[in-house]
Image: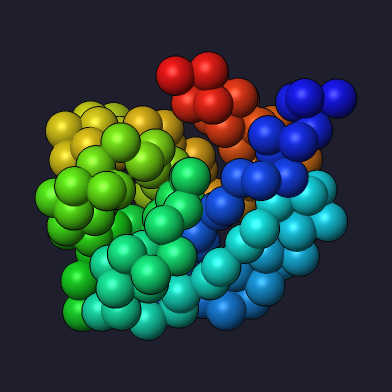
Length: 133
């Protein structure tokens, strides 16, 4: 029962420039008990993160104007967000992209397309592991 409470209290920020992706992820994670906020404008992502104070960030890599790597670094520079796990979502599948995502502070790397069930499993694992600390 305590695991369910931790999950329900967890806040997930989804940053992706494609509203159709964020709508699906938001609906699925909300139905699973998470509090979800979405940002489709990459330039507003860090501001949204500071306002929302998420427990986990789902972050697309390829976006117009800036990329997920820069946003990740900017989020990690904010003291109250420096500990927040960041899970990169990407259509790319190159080893150097995966390596770069970890170098800038990302915690996981999920390739699109992904199943919502798999995404939920990963978010659950990340939330449970960070809730113990």
